[in-house]
Length: 96
Image (cartoon, rainbow, N blue to C red):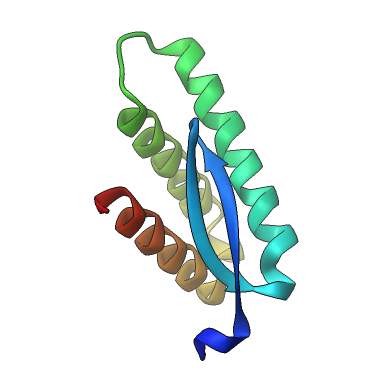
């Protein structure tokens, strides 16, 4: 995939902004996924005191992975690859 096919968007997760580049047709799905993740982080924050944002993000990711592992038969390798790519982008932004 060439960078010319990607559009830049800014998403907010756990109170931080992340600038990512995605395919235009993925924007709605990415924004929905970020909204769901942010709501899950907010829910976790209300149940577990004394944790930092990285802990909540990790817990959210673990919850998502566990849900997908339990569903087994609905495993989608394309979606798995997309999620891994998105996580790698988020990790790169965090490191910057």
